[in-house]
Length: 258
Image (cartoon, rainbow, N blue to C red; front, side, top):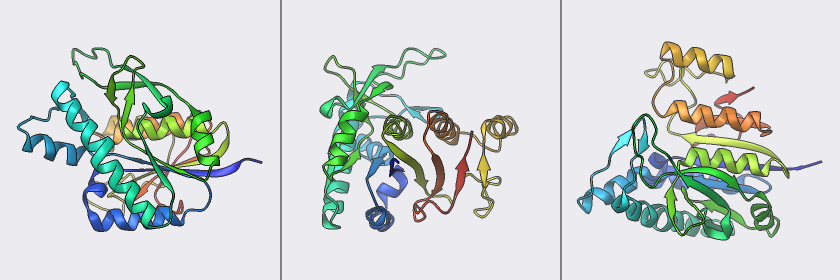
């Protein structure tokens, strides 16, 4: 019987709020068994870039990453945000270790090709996650904290969507563990009415997703989040939940099903 493992992804809005982040890390610390935390940090990166006179450009919720922006996200994601979270977890008795995809070659990507005429720059699409190395880390009683950065094996860091990293990490670890993937953010789940925080959709499967995309119930950054969640379930992740950052116990939110 496989051990239970939890992968939690926390978004940039929570990372930016000290009180919410502290509560999430407290709740994460209380989760039993092996666990992985994946974090974003786009809002902080945007602020730092602006202070340096670097313009942030987005297309469909995805950041265009030129050479200057790559330096910013590498500093912010791999340094400022990641090490702040690691230090706070250590203070809570969690022996955390901060990782980018380049560390121990845990996530290898390729540079995203032109898509619909858009050059995303130094953005990575994941090719593989080294589940064996992550399992070795976990079996030593360490808890990975993963930044949204990968590498191409040719010396280049690539900015990579944190939701994708969470999904691909969960998929790689499903070979060894009974994995629950939790996407935590500032809403209680996927909402049928964006103006009603109580309108949480209980479950979403592939057919539901296509319907909600077509009628506009889901859009923007929620589309790739649900796409990643469905891909994880299809690949053997036992359960995927999209929920509020203060509800990562697996009992609340929207459950993604096949």
